[in-house]
Length: 66
Image 1 (spheres, rainbow, N blue to C red):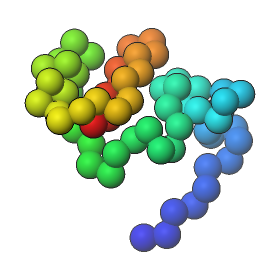
Image 2: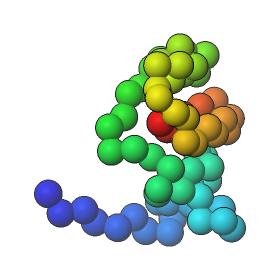
Image 3: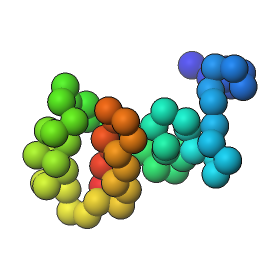
Image 4: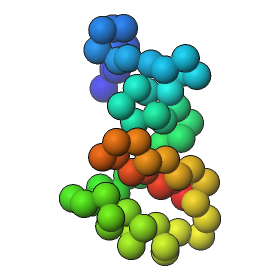
């Protein structure tokens, strides 16, 4: 599957290059993703990670990468 780049109007970036609504950079996201329905459950899942390399909470979005 070939990926088409997002246009600037579709992907708003912060000055540091992170995605506006998530405050994440491309290297902050793992190749395998687990989603939960409630941000409070993120810690319940990530407590089983060996390490947490990225921890970001922006608005209603909470991300842990480990």
